[in-house]
Image (tube, rainbow, N blue to C red):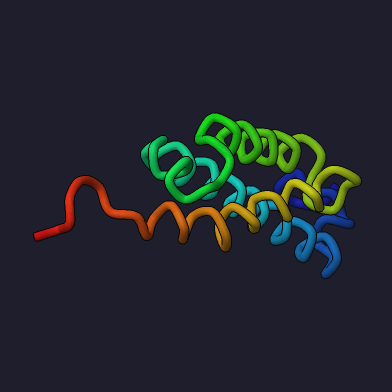
Length: 104
């Protein structure tokens, strides 16, 4: 143990990179979950995507997996991929839809 209670291997380059990946993946999946929760449910159906509860469950499970197992685990990589699919495919489709009439 070094000063501050950190193990010696956590201060190595590999340890710093892993910690950065962990918090980056956790932030990415948490952002996807929050975004999935704030979008209106009708937008998912109108865009032809899975329903809001389905995407909320997928992204919520991704947060839990990354938090408990880390981003480089057997289930961590698919969890990150699911969050990225939401952010690059579903989010723009749902976000592009307008509420209500024609906007006049």
